[in-house]
Length: 454
Image (cartoon, one colour):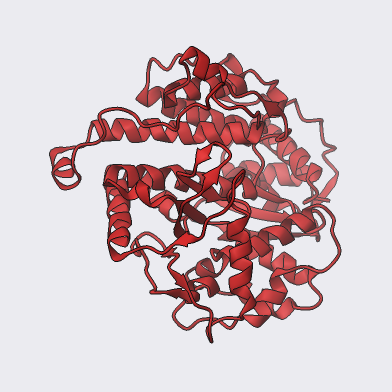
């Protein structure tokens, strides 16, 4: 939400044609804004515009033109959602996701919106021809809701969390690069969406696993749009169970998924009698997408389980030079490995000593009489409930998440000298003089480097 608001404010500054429309969106409440920027067409335009700004593009932007033509719906529906007939929300208690049913734009939204949505849909199935969407029957809708119910009952923290990142669920049959399509999520180019084969609804356990699978991808996609975990996301990585190599960012995404699948499997094994009576017994064996024929894994009979694949992917990431991961990337890996250790003590993954976090180089000493001031080329949005501040550099469109310590130091940079900032930080935080000096010097170096201090 905070990223959407700051992004819209930044786009309003840069879009000379439609600043009012973008500013209007940025002032909406959470309940009003999320269905709009969860809309696949609007979210795609938002992400495209943000990437353009990050790359120094100065031409026309797309979201403002769309927003100017789309009146707000009094019922709080996104523009694509207004076309869906019938209108179905499969888990209203967990978020505003809707089902892709018959899409009828007549008199509801501009006619070209349906064509734009279809182009995004057609571009979402990589490696194979796209098939028409399958219109869900009432029974399919019921089974999807039942799968979501099982997921949130089985994983009461994780389940609702991932469902909140889903805006639309559709059904299709088609071919992907790895064979018949089971399910996919966007990401690019169909943001906030899950597409799945109707057969994934055959039983509630498969439906729940599919929603978790694709939901965690969407959650991580949103996280990666908000901050970097890698410094070389395009590095190519061989995957023994696939014919083609993956970019290292995909390796991180897949590891995130497999760890969640292992958590799901453990929760399924421990499901109580009430859940089993209502949803049936979980599958006796793990169901993982098959290895590609003719690969190393196919020849050797290996990498057929989530644990084997998690071991390989984690081992590769841990073997990278330490500077390939950002500090957030190191924290992310530590969290994944801690979760893996909880569900599989014999995972066979032994983190090297440095996995607890990248050890930063000692910050250069800062002249105590130097004046520090927040840059005028920065916009911020506080998140007091999380103890964080989100700041965007309006020159680069890069967003930076400040924790409580950095937020406090940043707030003190009002034209005071470093000595005064350090003293006031020490008074407010309660740390001793040496710790205060170290904290302030490290923070000032980082915030100056990203251009939000001057």
